[in-house]
Length: 213
Image (tube, rainbow, N blue to C red; front, top):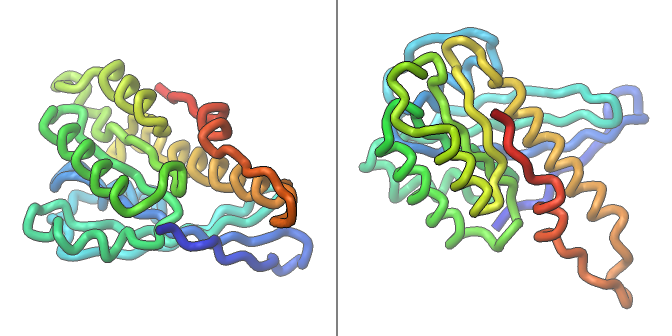
């Protein structure tokens, strides 16, 4: 189950601040740690497999609000699979990362999605499918269309990235921030509990869902 975003105000006292937990899931060596490091440090380094979980923070100062991401980078090795639910519990968003040059890792992302469906209600969190390692496009085993179709079928955000070349890394986190803030707006504009009609987040999700290539 996702937790409510922790909200506050910025130093100016005018702009709301939201704190969101974002978790990276995927098979080992798909580049989860490199994506997080590139996004937070704007740098690239080859990483050894993560042991357990790594933690990063990043703050986005947007026009109408401030978003603080608490980014949890989980281990992809099979031996850690059974404990990863402890890290993504209470998440607001998840990046399902696969390697475009390794078809097996897309299958891994699909298995992670099944695990998330057991933990969260439909549309309870924002999920993005991320095809990483665009710098290895010449060795591609997963076509853009395959990733796009899987994302569309399951109502996921979709983007292809490269942590090494910094291709669209910021874009995928910005897309997540925008989707989370859109949901905040929908919650705040919904009628009160007394006699209110339920907001259908499935319609909202379908309305905002698109693929970035």
